[in-house]
Amino acid sequence: MITLAVLAVLVLLLVLLLTSVYNRLVRTRGAVDNAWAQVDVQLKRRHDLVPNLVETVKGYASHERQTLEAVVAARSQAISARTPRDQAVAENALSAALKTLFAVAEAYPDLKAGQNFADLQEELATTENRIAYSRQYYNDAVLTYNNAIQTVPANIVAGMTGFSPRDYFRAPDEERGPVQVRF
Image 1 (cartoon, rainbow, N blue to C red):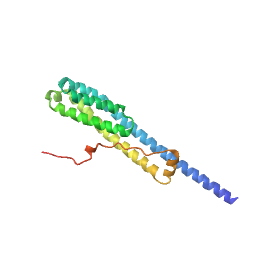
Image 2: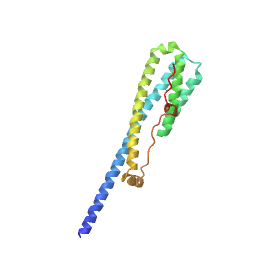
Image 3: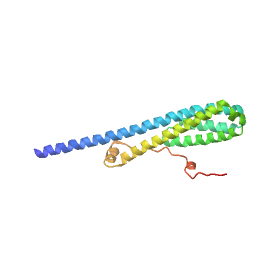
Image 4: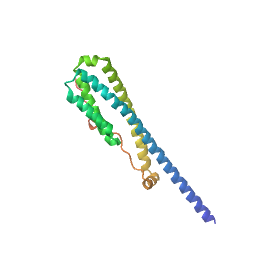
């Protein structure tokens, strides 16, 4: 009788442990999903600014058609990306296209001096900062989640219940190298 009671207590403790671990995994997965939603909100904001920026530049630099089309195409790819990995690739391409657009804008003093362009540029800079923060928050949530599903005993529960690692939102390769300063 005592052996049966001890066995029942051990089974109950094991069930409670597994339930606790499972619930922690669910919470960390939810935190990753929430963090991704925040990144997505900021990226949508960026995507909404791009057409206004293109239209503003188009009025001054209509012969820069290739640059404008590249920005529009990159925006379209960024909007259609669904996974963090695809989104990172598309957003990095959009960033590169926007850098080219701003380089073109440098050649047009009237454009740079225009209040509409300045406002859009400031709004985009603010949005880029928000995106950077959201990416960092997302990557921190992914780190916590990936660590949770890979540590004992959570890795056993994660394996049995279908929890799989998430991808980080990575910077493009050209942003990983040393900064080049030229005078």
